[in-house]
Image (tube, rainbow, N blue to C red):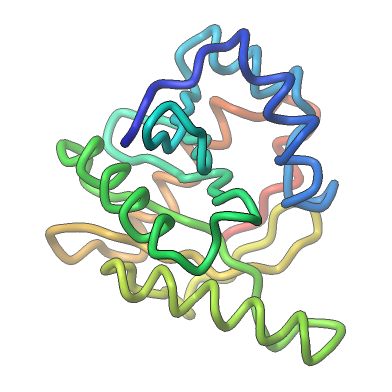
Length: 184
């Protein structure tokens, strides 16, 4: 069900899905991801069933942790349990890492009730897969105030999560954008 995303496939995936699934403030430009993939800083996976692509995951790597930067199931495949199965496989893929981290937008900062509900559902989705929300970490990236959620087989201290995120963004962001990460 999981297949490695080739660098040559990224542009099409980005245009067709990532740009629609994530706002400009939530996603880096395609060339940044592509460059990071070429340099083994990020990698991607496709969720595939019977030669049909169903979703994607773009992940930023560090020695001890993984940030699931972008995770999506194609709109026509949502609500069928595919995302849960796919996320489980992504988690298993990184079983040797101390922490698997996701960023989720804060529901309380939503601009509408519909947006708030979507954010709450996203948090619930990750909680069902064993992620724990760390509300005591003040986290902002590109002026988006977010929560960090962590999946780990052991308890992870707040300081370690902060260290992992700084390391990941130190590797993935160009120097001129590293000041866009605020975390404490």
